[in-house]
Length: 216
View 1 (cartoon, helix red, strand yellow):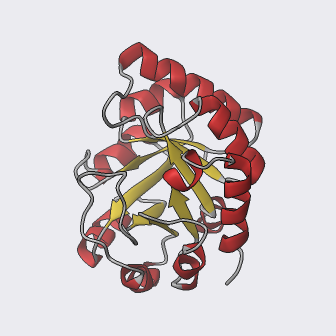
View 2: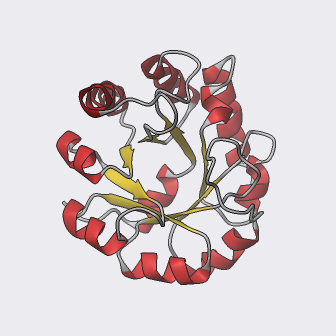
């Protein structure tokens, strides 16, 4: 298997949905199914936070979510847990700056997709050298999902990191109303959690988000 091309990666980042059991107001598998119908282009399984699942329960939910993604041709990414990603044979992993070293993760996962959260030029350069396939950049706007989130950056960092030539997805406080601004700054897509997982109508909320990421 060859590494994913930047062009293909950019197309997959358009509407990047991140969720686990703690984020969803409805049953997680149902939420992901509806989000797929609404138009997400990639999914990340992030099982973190108070009340999250562990061990066999975490694995079992991962299998169910991955099955839905596979059936619909949606890449399935695992957040942070490299062992789980390998056990599930996920399409890739996403890591933050506090997680395992990116170069070591690249060595473990081979040609699978590797996403890395970056917040400045130094982190971006290191991630690029380590073999990152895309950067997660943010938080762009205030977010309550991550209690340890860094300072809000706005879209300025996205504009700066375009020069690296690595696909970029914006993250943090993004919704249908501000997604266009993130795209205008140069991001290839937006990643969201609550904008989809807390929506009354998941499919409709996703479709609206998708619509607003196609307007440049």
